[in-house]
Image (cartoon, rainbow, N blue to C red; front, side):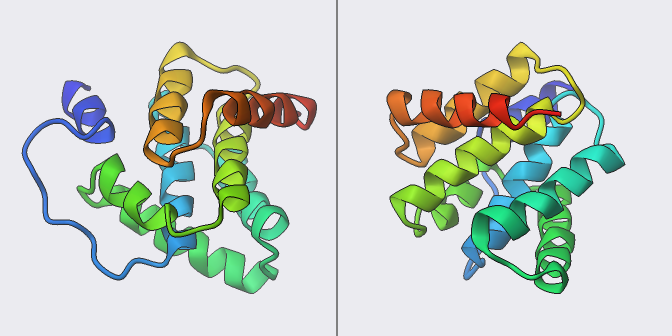
Length: 147
């Protein structure tokens, strides 16, 4: 499990950066990574990621499915969080805030959040230059929409 967390938080051996990655695919990979923090990626979380892509980024269902599949593939590969956030940072400030809200929604999809998920989200928010106030608002919105 140590390798998993070091990979999530950018530690361990350096890896080749992912080039020319669609920012929405990178965001989907971050959603998947958030779901994996507790060691389980359930259908409930996968469904939540697909819903987030449709509702947060105005994608149609077919495009959301494609982006989700690519995001799962990217998350499965040995890329670190920093490499993914580099691409997500190209999104507008509002969209980056929606990514943080989405990360909270994914972490709450299974009915319980854990301190490791919260730590991961704070780390990602920092890398995306989403300030603490915006992150707190994103968390509140996610909690209001939690199942």
